[in-house]
Image (cartoon, rainbow, N blue to C red; front, side):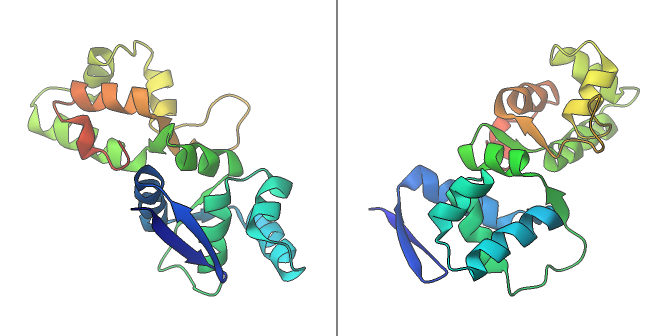
Length: 173
């Protein structure tokens, strides 16, 4: 039975996979970057529908609806600011947040005396430590001003297995 999302007085039917993705996205302590959020809110204030806003600003419609539903609420504490690209990747299910994965890898390093994050990266087939840092959001990719907040599901699963954990322990996989 399809679930229903109600945001900004509009109703959308969602299948099970979309509902799971929606719940994950709603639980993330993240928001759009300030400029993108202001643009979404301005378009909504002008009377634009979420689908139109999504097409105008190149965002997934679920993300627009979530941000509109959160519009009046102040986030608790400091939250990550995700770009449109990062939100779209999360909404499509091709990427997951890399912060929980970093924690999982750090815990694996602590459990294994004498091991380093580099060892887990090598087990996952990542030979370049700088590339591993970029995947995990420790350092930015060349030409970017900040580290990525997301990692592909394939890479996340590979890193989770290398850390000795089941990929399903990573939120979103």
